[in-house]
Image (cartoon, rainbow, N blue to C red; front, side, top):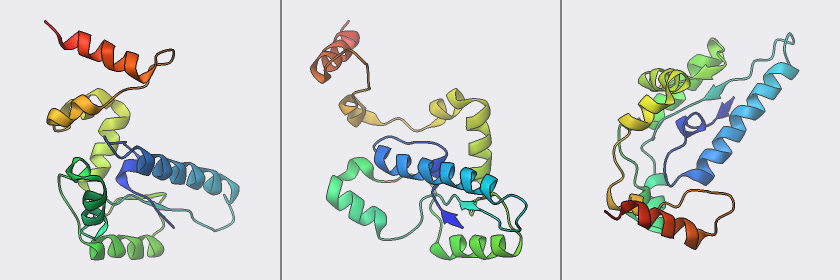
Amino acid sequence: MIVSSIVGKRGVPYMGACAATKFAQVGLAECLRAEVAGSGIHVSVVFPISTDTDFFEVMARESGTITRATGPRQQPADVADAIARSLDRPAAEVYPYAPARGLVLINALAAGLVRSARPTLGPQADNVVTSCPGYTRAQRCERRSAKRQP
């Protein structure tokens, strides 16, 4: 049983390092699942959404409000119950918050729809510098600023 996060299926702004580790967990589970196929061992990945724990309070305190999670939250007991159910009825993927499964499906079929449905980032979006091989950070900022001017 690997407890990952929904960001292991869909990265979100300002959570790149977290998303990278969660995507890695998904890859590990896929490898393990193939390695133990036919042995009676089941490998499950749990994909909770934001869970009401101290994690987000600490993250906001340490990095500011830009990383504050929005959207629905679930209780830790909901995640624990989903894990317990999965032990009785193994599944490759476990979604304690049922609507998250739909979001993952839509993302797989039409990622653009998920991107457009995501709430806007507001002014902090100006601080995002995307990767562009061959350009320095300053050049990317300059190019981005030039695109915004009338």
